[in-house]
Length: 435
Image (cartoon, rainbow, N blue to C red; front, side):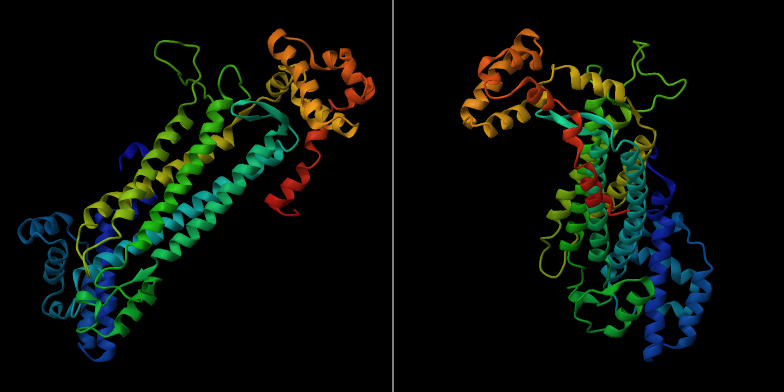
């Protein structure tokens, strides 16, 4: 997590100040529940809220204590006791460190998910706007990177919209997956703390009680969460790669916005490089790379170990901060994307009409030719276009085997671009609804 690829709202979730504030709220809410049950005096809970709630926790002081104790939660509790005074003896009663650490981590992941969902909403809005803008902008579809048949640029963007709409649903599910709380004590048995405490803390923090916490919240939940972030990152890379290909000089159907004063190369003043989408491709690799250690965290020893801890201290902030930045950058790229319909038309015309080959093939079969014979007739004329630069329509009209089955007018009709876009409205209704 470096400032270059960080945004302040997401970064704040992972700051020490935020972490210790959540730790305090967990302890204070638990104390409230203990007081209500009658385990601790209500006056003690009130004092902890009054003094701890108004306190600014001294990060340096906590770090100093931890250097001695070698235990972060004990360091925090020691510092809190200095603030609260005598009533601090009631804090953390029946609890274990994982109750604080795991519940806090899940609160942070839920907050991060909320920001990521909002990020996706902004990207969806940009994709929808640009998709409708270019709904009928005809371009060439490609398979294997080779010209296939005509589509529209709006259809490309509609595909991206549908994919990120699915990603939004995945993020909502991932948020729910980690929105659990554990206040169950050592080995998760509730031997020294009433389950009602966990229920109270969960409600106050917007979580639900973990059914069986075994002292730690099961890491299959977190594996699913980070895997979801990896899927979202992969979708970012897919869209970024599409833009990078479209920006190649030989294609130039779309291009990242190039701002006044921007420089593309230290050596070549003419360069306009797809630096943002290349950057997004790299960031996607990072986020995906954090999914695997999250999955490896699932297999902890018995009721708990802390082999997951070092991993999560890194991937929690890094994955969410990086993905937040990447989603915002992709939204900006789509918002400002330069689109060149004239170049799209030039590219459509580059192969001399070959993009209509399937229509001619089908027409020949409908006139009685076998599929094999029809394919051979079309392909032998198509190869003249590939190899000699001929015009496909002209070659077909000059082929007696073709004209024996199709008139010139029937052949010409198969070269209508509009034929390929007649169902764009249907696709858009499927993606965006009737509106």
